Image (cartoon, rainbow, N blue to C red; front, side, top):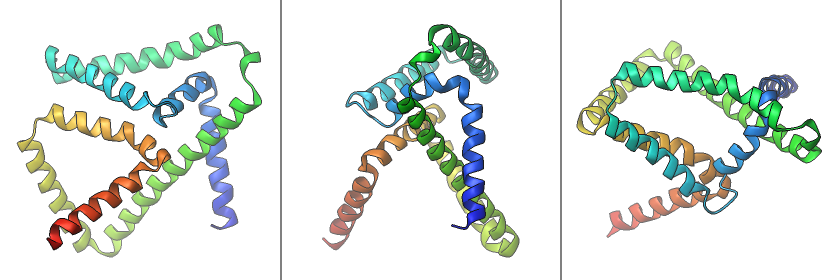
Length: 194
């Protein structure tokens, strides 16, 4: 990576850290859960998501109601968390070790965000340089997603997507993602050769 890339990455990380300053007391435990630092964290993630989706399934709210409630919850959390953390957590409890952990979290999150931006830029470049490949691939994937969406219940699809997104950091952190891919690869090759 060039010096400009390193400087941009560092600048992006510092901006992200400044934005997350009032959330720092929440981010550390949340990161701990997402990275499965305890053996029961994956169960907690799956359990909470399951309770939320079962509640939505039982209540069957209209789409507009569900969007309004989600936005209301986000607005309340955005308003109340900084106030509650300033009242409940004193400044002396914030240690150098916690600061180091926050910086590490911001670096990882910044790297992920920059990777997503890089993928988007690559897709834009393919769109400009090879429009036939871009549009044929896009159309194929959208038809596939439309067929899957028509075949499988949308709430179940959303549940699976949310579970997959929330469990991905833990899989990556524990090295189980590589193990799972390797297992599937070996299993499919053995089955194919048999």
